[in-house]
Length: 113
Image 1 (tube, helix red, strand yellow):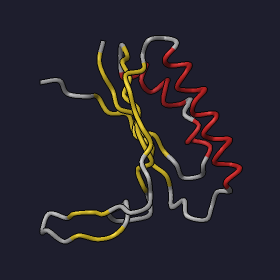
Image 2: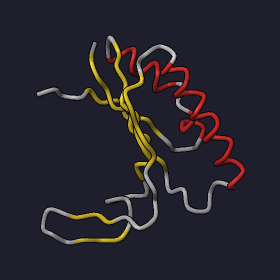
Image 3: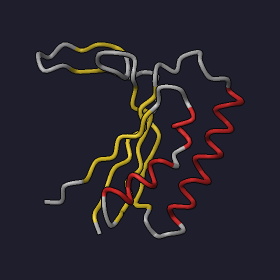
Image 4: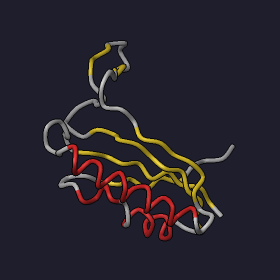
């Protein structure tokens, strides 16, 4: 069994989604995570706030915002166990975040030292 992070990337979300739609997606997210937990594949995870974030660059410059270049923001992640990258991708395809135009789920294997 391997461990993977599913990283939720959102296109610039400010003002594009109503509070009602956010509530619907949060409920869907909870149900989706519960389905992964039911298979004993959920390790952990959390959402990330978009407000009051900073970016620190290699030359020590600090800017406001939860993003570097472009408009894509990391909105959260979950840590799962899966037999293969294909199984992890299968879980990722069910992520409610993919309902948002331009949103993605990045699947990355976790290195264990």
